[in-house]
Image (tube, rainbow, N blue to C red; front, top):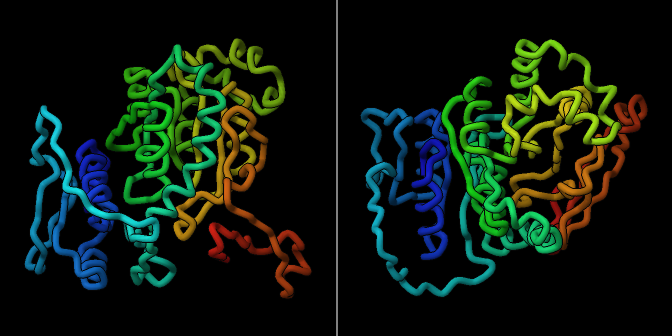
Length: 326
């Protein structure tokens, strides 16, 4: 599946998952040579493409379907009954790695289900308090080809229930416009976007300079002091879910000082992907939260010269359902 984020991507993904078809999501900005190697590795038989991909010229391709031309029947249609096991492959997520050579990570149905146990428990605990504002709207800025983008858009949002909004481009003005227009409550993004939005806010509202000193004050005080900033985002917006790269403390405290929640987590594609995450209703500043259900995580020091100079250097060892990754 080679496409930008769009509703048809979601439909095609679930159609494949429920009928036993293995999904291989590819970033729409991927070069054709990367696509060619992935096809050689997976022996893909069908290519679903979006509107913003550049089709390679002269390349041998499998059958090609345009996502924009998929049929959307009004009536419900029964899917073929396919026996599925927990350890059956659901998708293969490719990363380029340090060498640029595609590396495929096998994600099973069990991996996906294990990842949503903890979010489901939290949702069940707090859902009754949020029913008056359902559905909660999520603006997802992370590509669905990245499994972190899938977690919120495909797996967590249906549990809440939530509505997912996609947009194209990363203009800070357009991001804020979409948040207000769609009445989004949460943005799923990466630290770089928070940097871009911070620079935009400081240009628009000079009084938002250095809110870090307010980060530990009561939320109501922060909200009132920076109410003009909240007006830019819309009155329903309250949180950023951030992952895929380290978030600096400076950026975290900036947004916390303005009165927004910053919800961090940590994971790997190999762990489908969440290892730890912060409870949205009990976030801890400067942390990536607690291990998810059925997972254990430890930080071990490396016995190298570098660790002598910096004892904080180490590696994370995570175990999920008996599989250990480092």
